[in-house]
Image 1 (cartoon, rainbow, N blue to C red):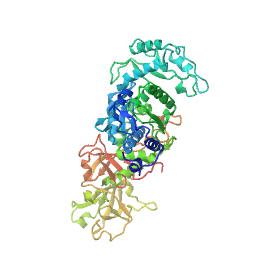
Image 2: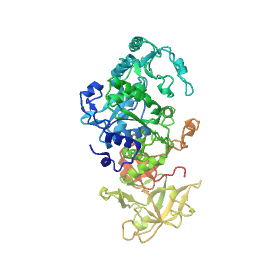
Image 3: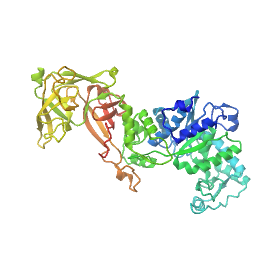
Image 4: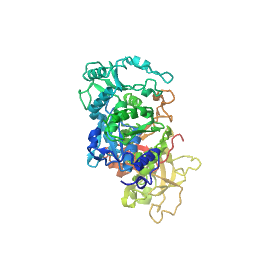
Length: 594
């Protein structure tokens, strides 16, 4: 195995890396065996030494689309396993039959793959489902009952809530707590056999109703749900609670480091209690997994609540789960974020034990840093007005003549070649590139001023034509001869302004969607207001633009730097050959609120 110091010399240190490196140095899990698949203690002990000294897992519930917070967890779990020559398991925590759908299973697998990670290792697929372990979970429950560590409680939900106590008052024992082992086993089997209605009874651990940690006050292990499961069908009508199932799943899969967000910190004592009891009974491998908590991702101008995101979709505030303004991974992908940028973002924000807010600009900067070295360049005019060169025929010999121009596909990668476009009498320029009376420091087009049309010629502005409302409809200029870029006379005239353009002759019409932050406040949903009131009405503007001719055949997911404007992607759903649609991913620099 490559040592962590060799493998991670450029990786930022964090407390989870320190824990893993300590366990590797001390050989905490070095003697454990692996049956080649998830298994109980007896099967694992018949196996070979575990080839993975580190095993992590990414365990989403398949009840919705993954979002940017999940992306952090994916990068963390799969990334740590990769960096320490371990294995990360892809596991679906499908213990709730009423909320899970195959659509979400497929979407989750696709998202993890798109982010650059996989679960195949040593010729084995490590794709698992919690429901695959229902038989063992039931067996473990009967063991706990037999050991006097669990009982069937038939109080109502209201009675259980009342008797649980609170932070200042201990709980009260259930009147069913002193049932015999035989009584509990019989009643639990009746639950299993469908003889009780939903909600009629639950199986609870017998721990301590006076515990200062409310999670240790006889937590529920199983509940009755007469519902069909997407994986097990109608085999079961009792289903394990998440807090019971999750540690068992980790143990059967030989997980070493179970990484959770901070809201599970209070559940760790039960995680350890349960695995300690099952290890004492010889049911699971030893040493068993350990849980470690880290701060979840709080990103400004973003919400990650599934309920609130669903509200945005259902009420039509966005076009769907893959709307480019959504923080879902499918939305971020359609917006144009790259897997590399998201991994870089996750690495930069690091891992801590303290909840903080990360500014959205950190994500955008990761994208710029990823795309700047590799994104092809192009010129685009997003708010076009026509520039007419009034002396074109005089200088070029014909109004219809075109002058071939070119520019590098990437300024620092000559091997990528050059892009070709035409310069003619009529040119599209940005409306903001002309002013009748220029403000101080304005170096673009105004009467009497000279500018260079980038990669083309120098022109001198002579004025503009306006409509009855005073809106500029046409800008006029004269071509300055012998000033074409790349020719000996190009530097003969010095100008301060250098503007982008697209020729009327070969420019391509394009729909450009200018996406911005979905909310107007840095921490939406925290002020007590309905998040709908905090939506940004300017989060999407659609403009009809002109782009270079090479972009006519842009394919979905192709990314470009539109010179001066920022980074754009050909929309993966709507872009068609000859009718390109581009989404703005990020501007050239952060300008939010400025």
